Amino acid sequence: MSSGNHYEQNLQADNIISRVQQAYPNGADQYQLAPIDQLHIGGIKASQKLLKHLTDGELVLEIGSGLGGLMRLAQQQNNLQIIGLDISHGLNKLNCVLAGLSITKAPTTVITGDAHLLPFSENCFDSIILQHSLLNMPNPTQVLNECLRVLQPKGKLILHEVLEGENVAEMKFPVPWAEKESGSHLMQETELKALIVDAGFELEGFSDWSTEALEWRKRQASKEQTVKNLSPVVSPAMVLGDQFSLMAGNLMRNLSGQSIRVVELVLKK
Ligand SMILES: C[S@@+](CC[C@H](N)C(=O)[O-])C[C@H]1O[C@@H](n2cnc3c(N)ncnc32)[C@H](O)[C@@H]1O
Image (cartoon, rainbow, N blue to C red; front, side, top):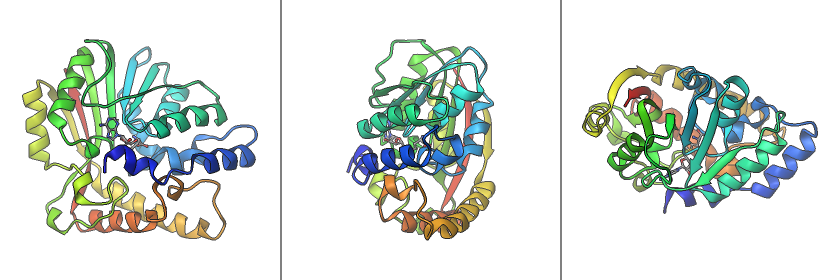
């Protein structure tokens, strides 16, 4: 199954739209949309940390923009222009509708396309962000080459991704990004670093966020348990389907058992 299908086969777009419209007639804020539009480990805080690497006035591309939580945060907090690209057309359509239902109502620019073949010319972006999307991409070398091509000289590539941990052999599926191992494209730290250098990037920063990622997942699990019986307005299950609680449980097991790691990398062209 392609990663696009993984995110679209259970997507309840109409249900999400009518619930958000009904619950938040004056517009939903970032926290109200976060269960569906921050589909990565670490939620809003992780996105805010990534956005600190951007400077006012930049033209930014987010690859694998999903339902657009990071894009909306960037529009609110930073004086910059951000374009989203995602392979899942259904997510892109919903992203645009959610922008109109959000508190700021700022329009969003999003393109349906594949990171392996970016529909942009050379040297056009100041920065590119990938947040939990390289993990779905079967040819990371080609994706890094494409990022290098469309980045301006001295442009930045910011990655917030999941890597293989030392106990990767014990990894449990399904996880939120893949039902089976065949849909998950994780690498070892050394492998990713070698690809980065081979592509021609300079590694400016590497941080391991695994400890805070596990703490975040534990807090989310207890919140999800509390709101379960209260019928939350939106939930990740409305995107990822009924298997979401199993996926989330496996995510926590994989983090605590060190089958996976969560890292941030900052690269310079
Ligand atoms: C785990 S979701 C993360 C979404 C978003 N970055 C977030 O954090 O909320 C992964 C996203 O990557 C997108 N994706 C996967 N493969 C892609 C590709 N080859 N090109 C563009 N987008 C892709 C998926 O459609 C999905 O929206």
